[in-house]
Length: 326
Ligand SMILES: CC(C)(COP(=O)(O)OP(=O)(O)OC[C@H]1O[C@@H](n2cnc3c(N)ncnc32)[C@H](O)[C@@H]1OP(=O)(O)O)[C@@H](O)C(=O)NCCC(=O)NCCS
Image (tube, rainbow, N blue to C red; front, side, top):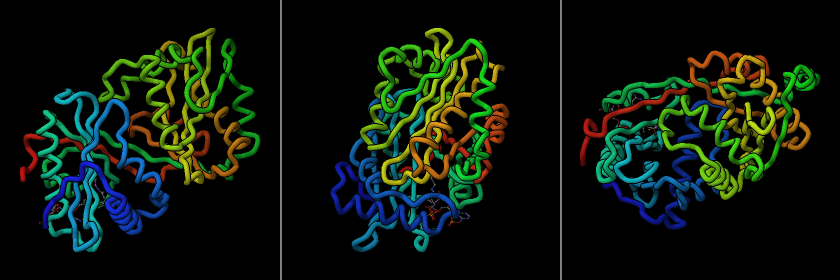
């Protein structure tokens, strides 16, 4: 079987790619929402600003057996790792297709001057022995939690809101950040950069807007709640309601800048978000979030709001030089 590079995916290739994702999802752990065809198409046609994407597939007759995508953040040769994602149809596994796709992806990473690569996988799935057999090591464990909105006691958000810290006020917006808060939000994002060790570029108002425009271009809705102390964003939380799959919204960043920590600002902004979504988006039934397994504070905030652990995932990393070549 040959690996083909897909530079400019055709409609048929996008359909074929989506069929692979659907087949992998059907055999995967229960509970994850099914992939959305529009989402797949948008993801394959356009990379996010500030990053490029390379795609490969292995054909099996007139359909695809497996697919691989690599995200290349920043410039070529940038110190940041590439990100690989490989998916093989369940009945065609253990025949070396995943290995072929990884070798193709490794060539692409080398050609782009990358020295390291990361992959996110679910604990307890074949991806773990697959990556470990290729020299990847686990560098981070993440706890995927879900909140079922119907299970939230009706008075909980209002109670937490009323307990808000003195001297702060809440603001909220939908979509791209209003100009008046853009620079302050960028400063708050910069302050949480210690959690996102790979996102080394400094946050400024332009990067915040660009990142938010990507969400809008995908057709997804971004909701933000921020706690202000004067004009300073002391903390914020973001939730994205995906286009076409609004049943499950995704928690994006939540952060409280170091000098404002310890005042329950994190749970305050999250309670305000919950109250807003309940009122504005009755179609949102669940909210999912990933937290670093060692971020005890954020895990505690989420548990207090009613989030429950649904799955454990891990981030694996390898040196590109150690990966197989084609
Ligand atoms: C992970 C995945 C891509 C592997 O694809 P694959 O085509 O089965 O991989 P290969 O046949 O090339 O496997 C290579 C080696 O990985 C290891 N491996 C792969 N699956 C394994 C499993 N279920 N149990 C134990 N070892 C496994 C073995 O060492 C295997 O070599 P062997 O078959 O000679 O023993 C596939 O299982 C998949 O699509 N999983 C769901 C999507 C996913 O989680 N992707 C990972 C993101 S990178």
